[in-house]
Image 1 (cartoon, rainbow, N blue to C red):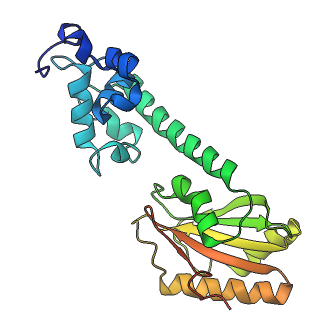
Image 2: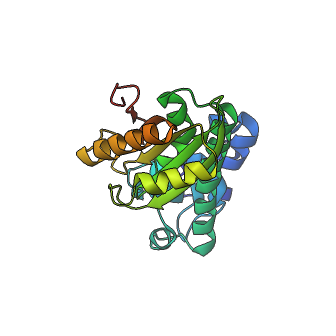
Length: 232
């Protein structure tokens, strides 16, 4: 057992850093990976036990919960000072940027709701408030511009066709799609989501700009109005 041992008193084969170098990071548990990042523990607690306690504190419990913790919340946890809080925040942001970069390297042509969801999932599923994003494509379906039009509750007054298509016309769009997230994790469309989609599709027909889709991002799930046959 290593619960009450200082890191230097733990058998070398069981220390997170040495185990990482010997077995590779894939051989480490979540707590061991976090312990390597934390480097040191707190008074009376080694880095591995601090990591375990931190993972239990996160909501939802575990590594995904770390993405939801803010700096002030981290600083309230015993043993987490400003440096450790900054390290945890930065490793979470680095992880999100890596997934975002990977998704956007693999998906440049938007052909379906699934493409849009793959493009946005890791970037948007952890957001704590709604974001409404516009995607503008050329005549080959290649993404030429992406913009976050607003943050906050999605409703017809803020997600107006006027604001969306002013931006689309500025970029000489051939087709557009919009994406927003549901922070609660359920991508099922609300009546307001349906109204917004109908208004955007109607405005696109009037302007001669193809309204490709409206995709709602949940937690590892998405809803595509086009895929469900809800865009005429």
